[in-house]
Length: 268
Figure 1 (tube, rainbow, N blue to C red):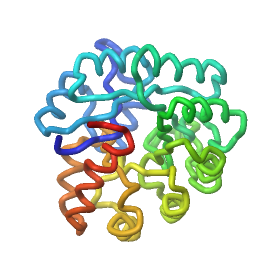
Figure 2 (cartoon, rainbow, N blue to C red):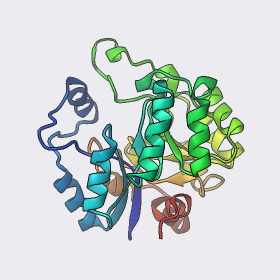
Figure 3 (cartoon, helix red, strand yellow):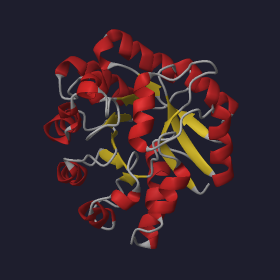
Figure 4 (cartoon, rainbow, N blue to C red):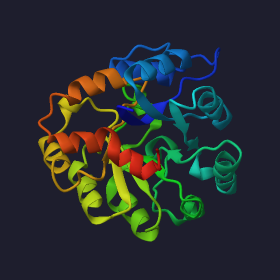
């Protein structure tokens, strides 16, 4: 295993089509649409990369994991606004579909992670000992559409929202998805302060990483950072090519690409 990509959006089932929002996101990232599960599996197998996949349909996610068990593990995708139904979806994903985490999107779903309305969901994930991966920072969702398609970036701020969540659930493993621009230093502060919080590097080509992020990666948060691509809008091939240009210690590079995720996700 060369690396573990912790942030992959699994392509939908055949015939699922492409929404206007997806087309706008492809334009935002300069990506090409039309990727299939078969394309994804072939790419990750050729690169010797294991991946974490998620999508709106948990049964489809697990179908893909069942088809390619040596390539992928799955996370449940749920909307915290669904209350008890969201909790039940996580339990079902864990017990029936063998999904080993939860993915949510605060800006896209319009919620603050420190709203106690959603605490039963975080508590259930803590009880099941599965991580919660939350979008942070600006987002490609709605980018370029009128009014950003109604998406409000404020929900992606790390402090106080994710910081509060981490303090209130110290046993819950939390992954902040993406470099949290424009709140990069807030994100790094949470990583340093809260032992149960990690970040993935998805959604940004490493050539656009801010110097302070590279500085912290090379030093005090080297055990808290995970490789993620954001496939299919940003592929693992492109991300890893740009990652090679960063001035990182060899042992840090190994931790980010593989070792940190293996430990966090209990992957052999």
